[in-house]
Image 1 (cartoon, helix red, strand yellow):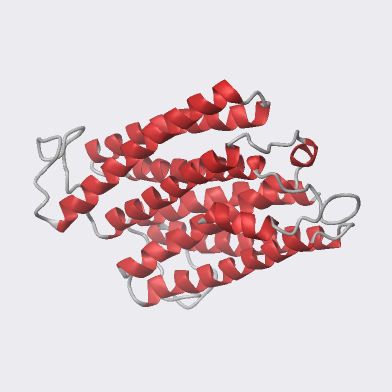
Image 2 (cartoon, rainbow, N blue to C red):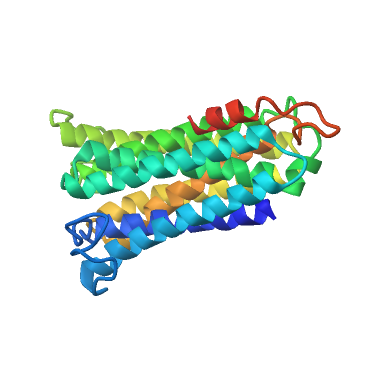
Length: 311
């Protein structure tokens, strides 16, 4: 039951990230000028930018409730799983901090540092939730011993690159550097543009890291598909391979269409999907015991492993 609830919460979180991207892309971030109310009420007229901004807030509130319900169900299951219980507490802490950051973005009128930190924490929570979803599944508990498969290292490498690329992308968006290179696939007509302006440096760095991520993902996918026969890891790296190539295309498309909300929002959603799949691959390759206690070796390293997978 806990696994199904965490999976549903994971889907809800992806939808929330999409909504957040739409809010920014449609310039609706300050459509509600106050927080936590919107024009002094919790039930404003849902029109224009208010629709997107207030819907985003309501969706976020529902996410907190969903995660708490999943946490309660997990804690009530027998035998107890202390490492997973601690991980859920970390998730609740992240959600509370994230709520405060969301309010600060409105109160302080979208400062770049807070807005970027808001996305970073959202992605950290997504990674933590992915770990919980994977390790509470029956398939994870019954899988062959993955020791020596390299899946953990591959997953962590890709997750780290996706996270860094996403934070850099958030900086590009929040500093209005999205069209600092207005042409594609070149930048200011060159393969390597003149890097004498910080906005060009930021934008070009985002592109360069994206291509490095794509190359790393292709190499990792080829390695896993050649050396590992398990169906779940093969599906995950297949999804990563397709997703990262689509992400590069979406990045170029976003520039070509002058940051159209549909293209930019899909770009953000796909980045979240890539992070979740790479963390899932790392979690699947972690060689820890399937349960805390009750006939299995202690699962004392899960909390540490989950934190590592998110860093």
